[in-house]
Length: 221
Image 1 (cartoon, rainbow, N blue to C red):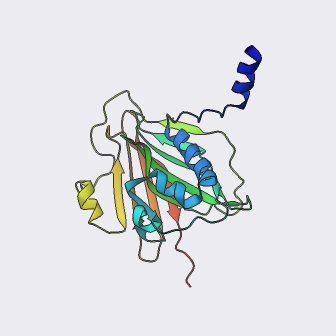
Image 2 (cartoon, rainbow, N blue to C red):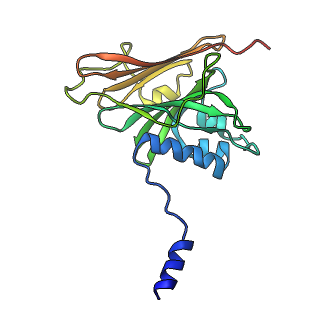
Image 3 (cartoon, rainbow, N blue to C red):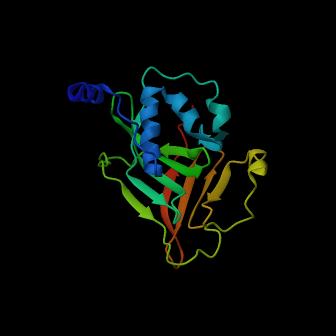
């Protein structure tokens, strides 16, 4: 009986890793790209109001709807994760690799934990500076301060749009924040495709800009 139990345990499929953090979600997203197909995985993990860039901003659900999976998916991994105090919002960034495993550039993904689990709301990336070496495997996790309540919105500007208003406003700019207001981000795309993303975290005393992505305009065709 014991031998049969051990054999059954040895052949049983391993339980999928628990998805607790946005880093866990990023790894699961990357695994699904290999397992299910690249664009299938993007569709699976995208929030209803997620944005991507082509280079102008597009609603991910519309853009991804008809895309067919390539024969091989790209790969990626997070090396930095900026997390809100309550742990329900995070910004991950790290390298992505082409199908031949050569370094392709960097990605940045904004994640929010929803009633359906973690979903990404922003996905963008760009090229690393010339001569950049491949980042290591360790994830540098930086959490916003919980020492004092954040006083207001991380990003100064006009009032935040509701989700419904945002879906009806196809301007090439946007911003968001965690529900506890300890993590915020904004992005803007110029007419030539130049894009900028800024991420802010609450330090307990002030908001600090902890990540900036500057993406150059694509070459003219």
